[in-house]
Image: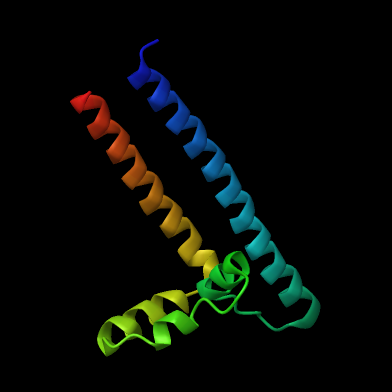
Length: 110
């Protein structure tokens, strides 16, 4: 097995693990929201920004309030305030697509 094939196989394994992890996270978020709704009758909104706050250990969204480009800031804040249960599969789709494209292009070059 040459180095390109090994690299491709490693990336495939990483993408598979990432996909499984993202799927589990997606179902946990949606499950939490559904259980809370069934118990209390109120839907708990979980914006995507909360996930970044959890991963960074702070207020991730505060970084964007200091931006000088007001229009770009509003677009970013709008995206970060979309529901996590919708945005997580979208982000995984785009990230996996970008990595697969990168692997395919690097395999063609090398």
